[in-house]
Image (spheres, helix red, strand yellow):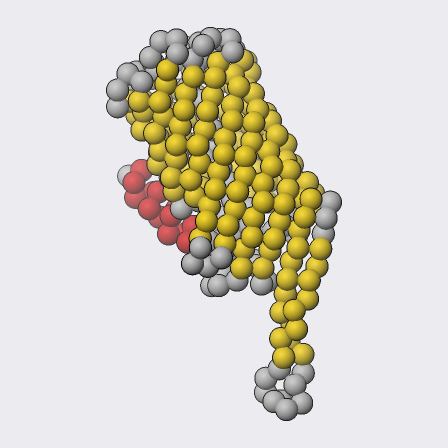
Length: 248
């Protein structure tokens, strides 16, 4: 069932492949006791990322993530990195409520190939941006074999560079049915934007310290105009836990 759902979403993600802004895998760490550390690596249609989390105490966790997506055949690329912290507000039985927050920086380029209105890409985008985020997260660990988490990442973007290039037709007297394509460039430095990224992770235990992760989330711009985005972040990964006790 889960595999079919991910496959369906992955097919839809192909339609939004021309994107300058690409989401990270939603980070929902399992570390919960002082001294525990977790390293993760994920791969999906939204690219690849590495994640790290370290528990400074039973409630305070430091987080970091780096992401890249390169489609050399089409000339698209996107890089981003972020760092933050999370504070656990409540720990009901086998559950955890945590709020994460932090800052990130990224850049991307997308050039038109096949791109329907799902991307809203006129010709090309080149962006460079910083952002801040908050992410309320719920984690449920019914037993040692599985963990389920869900969260909503709310981010505010500051586009340090946003260049849009369009090709607009001009009349060609020598070829009335056709025309000449004239490139037009629009720069919007300093433009801001908001996004929501709801999603979930499912982690299954392979060994006391190693877990398999299945993830899915959706990056939703809350306003227009906004640079082209990859809507779906769907993938699979591994998490390795060390320090303190083994992953519970």
